[in-house]
Length: 258
Image 1 (cartoon, rainbow, N blue to C red):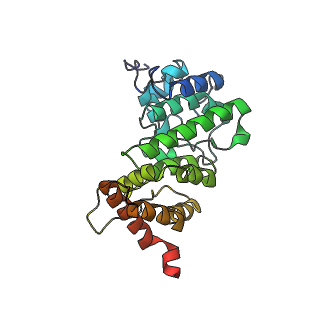
Image 2 (cartoon, rainbow, N blue to C red):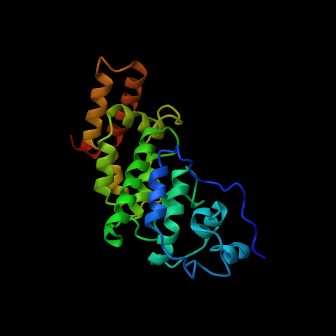
Image 3 (spheres, rainbow, N blue to C red):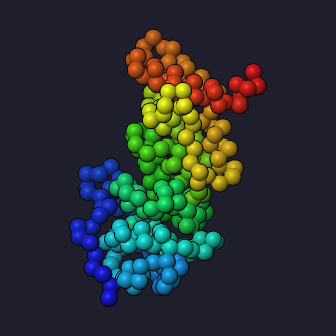
């Protein structure tokens, strides 16, 4: 007997949310036909009642615990079909925009069951929505003090977004904002003297190496050192800039070559 949906529905955006229009456009553009299959392990991995009831509600009303149960299920290593992913995608994006976990194993695997970040897989209209979402989501993560920036970068990279473009978006952030973000990630909760670059274990080669090279680049070191030494920089921010620059200096390959 299929279980009743939980009310009120979790991970739904309100009209005043900054992501509301993007998600509304996603539902309009990714108006895919309801699939005939979940494209994941059947009669094994998913809760039997959830599996039987999975497609009964409109996609915008798919319960969060249903989606999480789907993400828990095993799937073919080659990914799932575009039809199934395109149908689920607007709800997945809404869950992420609502700051909820779609995949309980980690944020990093939320978008990689299909090559979501490859523009060749989508129409021009679909890609515009995905590109807007990616840029808005990354900008939000750069501006906050919870979670880890690297987890977000890894999520988009595993889904097929171009790494150089992702790093360029981060590098374009104001120095003050980027220092705050990296200080929270690398220094805030560390024992003094144990500060370190945070990189998630979910990276796949060569993403891990490229991420580490970006975080420990001479370019970032110079930017943060300049901010730390600027007489106009507020004292607490200067201390954070110096701390982040010190982590970069300790790990930068360029430093070992000098």
